[in-house]
Image 1 (cartoon, rainbow, N blue to C red):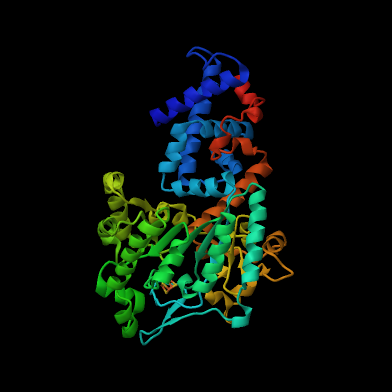
Image 2: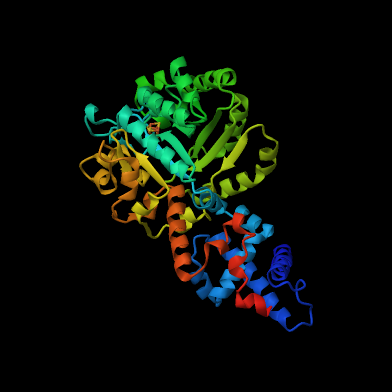
Length: 484
Ligand code: SF4
């Protein structure tokens, strides 16, 4: 038993009892109610440990496994919500990222619209879901099917932003991401329209790019028009960079080397400091079997370049070898002090840990249409999908028809973004292993949230909804609180 956590929970339970019932704090050691009081504290500490391992577990399941009833769960959840030590324990767990998903989508009620911009990419990355490595070593990149005349128009983009303003007017903040798919900067005209609309309406935009096309002043200025530019950089040696990014395509290796990319980033940062000092620029690094020992070098590079942050994420499509997992655990632990002192924000995705639920909870399916309540992907041809799996170029190819299966419809003069969200059809279930970690966590939380409300746990007692900690209306009549 963790004394710090138990003491904090006991103190908070005493306060809660006093606030709700007007009695003096916790019962004394000889009070017969003390046993019940201690039982609540011990049970709540057990629930915190359980949620740290499996934050997606519905209350009814926890109650069944721990032999508790709904009133006990409700009181314990309220206690977790109000106790900083419990919150800290959940945040520090390998599943701490889960709380960020809850915060963005369920507490702040953010809506995310992701424009997949770009019909081409100079890269041919080995780990890219759009890339097929042929038997002769050459690489083929999948492209979106569809005519040029069917591409999303400025008018349709304008209509999407009108709907986003409508969403914001309902008190839901909107975040726009420009990403891919393929490389957004391969279609600067569409990017310019999106950025212009976003500026006019004061909507935040994040850009995700591989940085290879940041070699002209015009494209760099365009990139800097977004509030956050996240550049992929997953290889630190020139020779490896060529191999991972382009394979045996020698022409591309010659044109787009690592030095070329670093030059682009340096120029971008120099111009950022003069033109748009508020724009954040960071690196997005996929930790691979080939580069996991380079994490300290990536951090030094980020510091030397002068970027604002570096994000380390896993390759979602393949788990790590055991040796790699052990190395990552130790390295991330050892870097805590460096992280505090660094001029760069250093972030490690929770899913880099093999204890994270992305790897431990692979069995199951999501109901894609439910994700459209929180986010939507828009392809270069205006098709809208609630999951990134339905928006990749491969989704539109003949062999799997994913584009059709997971499309909620195409934007048109007769069908706006809000129409599509409002009439989202039920879609075939999608296996968790096809989701990225954020979608995976969102799917689990949608399910947990629905099941908890259905079982009678009020939103005001949700263990992760800390802003509702002072809302004790629902807990006043909890019979257990009256017995302790
Ligand atoms: S840069 Fe991105 S889109 Fe292009 S091949 Fe690599 S991973 Fe795929």
